[in-house]
Image (cartoon, rainbow, N blue to C red; front, top):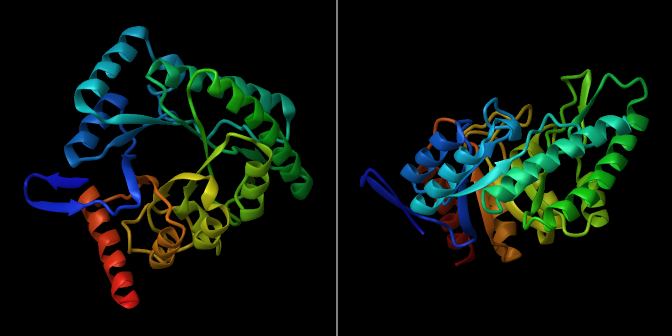
Length: 288
């Protein structure tokens, strides 16, 4: 795939990237236009935004967007509402979140079978943190098992995205933020795919390269941005401390291919691909 922007510069996609997705927190209709302009193959419909949630969609709006998808050749990924507590320590809240996300699946099915990115959600001010997190993870596993089957019947894939392991911003705690937790969920939910957000995995001394090495066979796609390990900053690639050379080396070693979403603020798709191509060239030079 060749990316052209305003005929000024051309960047080739690394071979391991089968598609590129843009997330820029726009309405679905504006987002597809921006994605097409830069040469993305996919774009995120952000289900956390007012106006993009299942109840905000009408049959006419769905039909109009499906026509735009067909005309532009840019496909949607429905980035589900990360605020939904799918992994709540309160079963009733987790059940309500499951019902809500099923509506996201219904919308994605109506849009032609867009994959739905889901998250573990969070818990608020638990008195017994370890026990509450354990309950939350158990609820997440049970809910995902039901959700994957519900989505399969509607020709929709469920992609689990990891959240950041914040340790300084409580009284809340995200669920499913550590390598062993990712592995446990994936091992216990057949048919679930992993959408690895490497920037999230880098927060609080996390090691996204190690996560990828262990779980690459489950990874259907990845979200790329950079940070300095403290918070999910959405820096352009190379502006933080994330080990992209190590990650790309692991990608090439395992011959991984998949969709890459870019959540970089202040850079274009061409900028991101230029950075990845430069890293790949340096790795090739070292091998040679």
